[in-house]
Length: 390
Ligand code: NIG
Ligand code: FE
Image (spheres, rainbow, N blue to C red):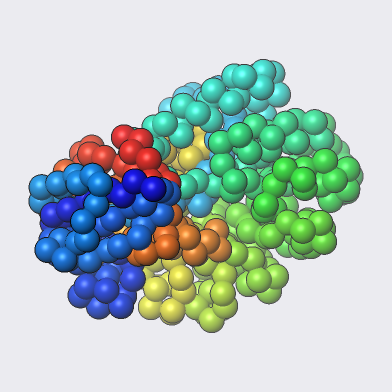
């Protein structure tokens, strides 16, 4: 198999604390990475790199692992510009806006939906995202949810069944009937197409008991739980996630001390989605409080047309550093290794032998520039599974 070395990387984030400077980022100065097929086979100082078939001189640019965006909602049609305008004129964000996207999504063809996913993925890739998770949740019928998952599965392995996004408008007078549908025939149709099950546990969506019933039913069908929790207010979502051993509790904006302690002590990752707070003008989640309590924190985009219409992980990194109390090192770790942890993946989010060859070269001497130079397109090359894709 052909081997390729990327040499003279000014500063390489490996996310292996046993390498380089011994911090969680495992930073190596003047580094090289050797790729063979779809894997990384060697990481170290450039002067010690083994001979390879091809050499690409990074010429003083920094490199990081490809971003892992562990939370997005890409199977949708239309947009919600008017709703955004209204919010920026002082209206609050409401979960009910989801109905607008449900109507547009139901009316779209498979081809339109798939092209939309591909478009946002291409955007994300240009900004360094090499792995993403995406969800259903804008269909809310058996057929439309299963269709969304089939379409998502054409683009990623990390597919999440979110039939419980809101109570379907078709069941406005019968929320219990909708929970029966989500845990019954809809789950039956959707489980073969998904790895994860999610629920929006929030006032105006599903309460703690409903969320428990939904996630437990998913578990019985072999789906692993994750949850939208504590976004718009305090609630039972985080505690439920930890109790069920969910891979991740996402949003985590309104947390009691008990919630923070539970995340600090449990194995559930706290995934923070600063694009949502940005786009809804809401209170920032307190990453510092979670990190100080020992929680594993991931950063993701939550890309969706309602609450966070960004596909940019660098933007989320910059917000997390500026407004959520994270250092640049912590934010980069959370956007790469943290996302991998939220998806319970060990093959991505690090640049060490055996990992998938997902590598991002930056037009900057250090990863810190991703937060230091917000809004600047610093991604200059991307490899995904060993293939140069940008
Ligand atoms: O993660 N919170 C629930 N779901 C999305 C919002 C979806 C929408 O508004 O369309 C979120 O923010
Ligand atoms: Fe979301």
